[in-house]
Image 1 (cartoon, rainbow, N blue to C red):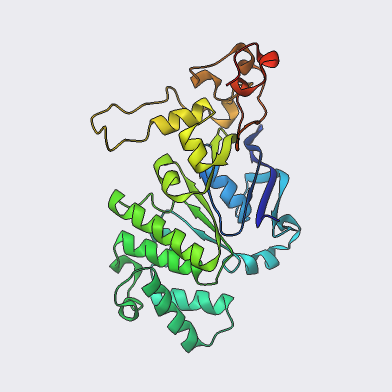
Image 2 (cartoon, rainbow, N blue to C red):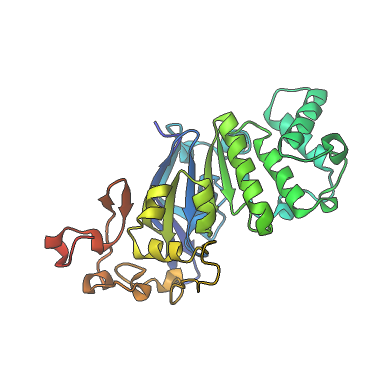
Length: 328
C-alpha cells in the first residue's frame, strides 16, 4: 500500500461570477522512503497540490473533487482537530521562505523545543537535548549557542537548515517540500537538497518535492510528475523522463536545463506562457505552445498513454489507427 495516494484531485477557485478549476483530476502515489518530484512553471498547480494534502487551502480555494489517502486512511474524513495533531507530527512541511516559516520574536531553540514538546512525549530537558541534536544534524555549528539566536541573526542558508530541523522534529513520515531552495543561492541549493534527502532516508520518510527547476528534480527525485495548467502532462521514473521525455512540454523543460559541457550554448525557451485558469484552451492545454500540435489536440483532451514505465498525456503516443500519425 502506498504511503500517500492522491486520487482524482481537483481544486476550484471560486470567483464572484464564476468558478475555475485550477487543479484538474490528478492522481499519483508516494511510497514510504520515496522522493516524488512535482515540477512545472508557476501556475501549474504544484503548490496547491501540496496545500491540499496539508489541508491548508483557504477560500476562495476549495477541494472540489477526489480524495487523499494517507496509509490507507482518507484524510478528508478526519476532523480538523485530529488533522491538526497529524500536521507536523506525521505530515510536515518545508516552505521556500524561511523568514515567514520562523517566528521572528522567538529564539531558534525555543521554537524547536516547543515543536518537539507538541509532538513527542519528552521532558523539557530532553526536548532541549533533541533540539541541539537536530541543529547539529542539519549542519549548524555550535548548536547550543545557536539555540539562543533569533532568526534574523542567521544567514538564509542557516535559517533554511533550522526549518529542516523543525520539519523533522516530530519524526514525520511524509515531508511536503515546497520550493525549499528557491530563496537560496545556487551554491547552497545542492547542500540543502542533499541534507533533506539524507535526513528523510535515515528516518524512512517520504518526500513530495515541489519545484520549478528540472535540474533539481534530476538531483533529488526518484520519480517525477510534470504538471501543466493543473493537469498531469507526464509521470514516471526521473531517469527515464529525463532520458526519454514523452510529452513536448517535458521535452521543453529538459532542453532548458543548462549543460556544463556546453556553457556558451543558447538555452531553449518554450514560446508563449501558461494560460490562466479562466483562459485555459480546449483540448490539450499545451497545444497553443506545442511545436508538434495536431488537429485533434485543439478540442480533445488526451488521456495518459503508457510508454515503458512512464505515462504522458499526449496524442502523439496514441495508437496509429487512432491518430493517423506515427506512434511516438
